[in-house]
Length: 302
Image (cartoon, rainbow, N blue to C red; front, side, top):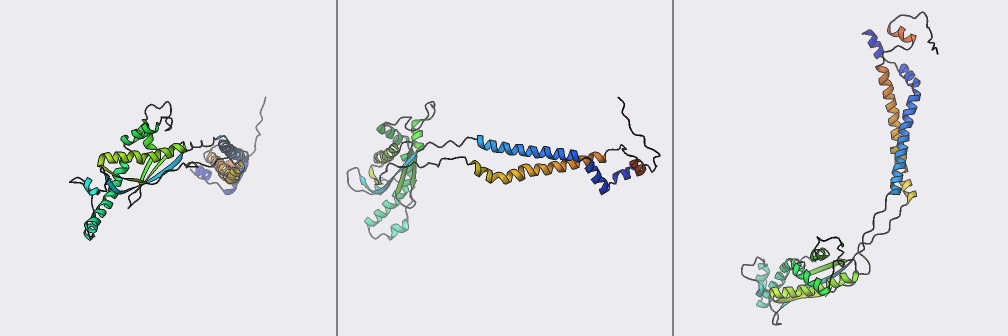
């Protein structure tokens, strides 16, 4: 028991001597970890060099047409109120406070028309992207699957759905104005589709509600520049190295070297602590308490 206690007590001088005797092992482990960190740094740089640049997107152009829902005109060509097209039981809410403040019948009807037009905006935006409108646009303009960027081997995508995906409809809050935007790989085709939508849409509305209250405020123009253009990307190796040199020296090389050094120390002390063999005569005197009379050197014979 006393021998084990003596073995378990290690002085700082002994620790230093043990580490000094194993300095080659410590240096080797440290250099191995340092080399691994260096190799990883080279790998990171090579990975950056060999990594392909992002593929630039296909350039697309966008055109926008602005329409407004104004005073409706009936099928007989005379101005009419939107009030005439609302069926009993309609869920369209009218601001009754404004109606109560109206001074005459004409003002009341105008307020009703304005409020109802705003409510119809949501309905109109849905009708614009309906299959009835889309099929008519495709037929009138002679659009093909290639015009709408449908891949030749794609047999699942319907041409109507492809066209609907290029159309964006947005209403200006609190107004009767609707913006219709169309994007396409061809600038002229995007403008043509955008300008043709109100024409087809107006006819559909006239057939449904028997009114004509869709008017173009600003027609779509052919865009000069694509909306999704991005600047060409070039790999700047000097800038990359300058930016990442600190990471290479500290994180990828210094930390592994320090970790290898600490790992070597732990391994040496761990092996020494559980090593019960006697290597010198001094250890015999320390652990057993007996002095050695002589030391016979080990001679190796061939």
